[in-house]
Length: 555
Image (cartoon, rainbow, N blue to C red):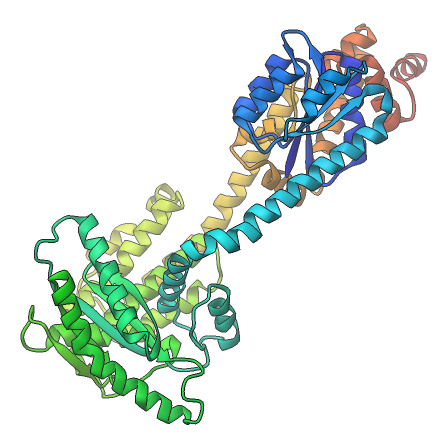
């Protein structure tokens, strides 16, 4: 949405310009009327203004002073200056300012003014396109790529469904990740065993970055690799064969060479960390590649293998066969990590009102087993995890008071490792269903309250500023969003509702009072009664005076 502020101390010209542009119905352009330079400064102090259409000669501040104030606050704002006199020197001085789009005589007519506004809007759009597309891709994207790549890889680790390779490849290509989505991936874990002299969080962040760089540098000669932080002591590396290398080899042969290279470089990575950073690390590599949706499971197995092997805290070099069946204890640990991920999805989907929450819950139940985990500690941790998720949801959605009165929330306190697992799952499933139902009711109630606030504000301020921006401030919403939401919720635009209320009040004042036309006009927020006449006749088919007299005759 764009905002154009019209500034003129002559009410007739101000209202005429505002009415002209409102009738022009330029998409997503909000009009703000301002009668003085001081009022303009007030708006500039509180809102981003995209275009200023201003009289050049006003009491207290001339056009050039106003331009300086505008540029000081909103340097990308475009200014169109209007004057009643042909002042060449003044015009020349104004046009030299890069924010000034045009300098017009008021006698040049509305079409010329509209044309200048169109030029200003086009210039804003073209500048944004350059700044946010071309410039961003050329100058800023290279600096942000590492962060975007890490975010995507972290997101992939949270995905539990089978991945659409075509969509994933599009994501890779967009942020220049050199991977092939349809090919498997080889996972590596680098774990920091001892920090040495690196004591502060900032030092350790830099060291993790350095470890990632070392691994990418050493493995990047023969493989495509990206390293990301998994936690404060663990870096994960994702590896595929270098694209286009050794084209005469089959896929299997290419992967065999990549495996040999990676496994052979494990010690080099460890030594480089020790030599360059004085850092003690362990390197743990899978002996098998996996599909992208299996990455999280594989990384959990590598991490557990590092902790379960002898020599905790020592510099290990481990190759883990992730295809072998897991020991029962490790399997439960891996399942526990997966259940935590599913609870994150469950919470997010319930917060969003997404009906797919039940899929995450069902997977959580399946991972636990029909009777729950056999290990009592694992069972207790899963029970604690889902209980915390439930309490966080109730709190964040503002349903705590309702939950305490409508649901037996205290039942959570009585659950223990001896509680039948079917009773546990039935309780939480029922409670999540209750959250979904009451979340919708709460949101409907909130929407109704916002509508009431808007209607009440309009009713009390029909003679004041009823711009979209001002109303949006009253309910703390984005103006563009408010406009779309109100139309969707009520079936009519906010401006139509305001017009209806102004018409209702005008009829009441015409029939129930002896107020003069200019007084009624002022109470309805029209700075000139001629605009009130036009508004009334357009909506009723007669003038205000005719309406008053017709009703008197009938009475």
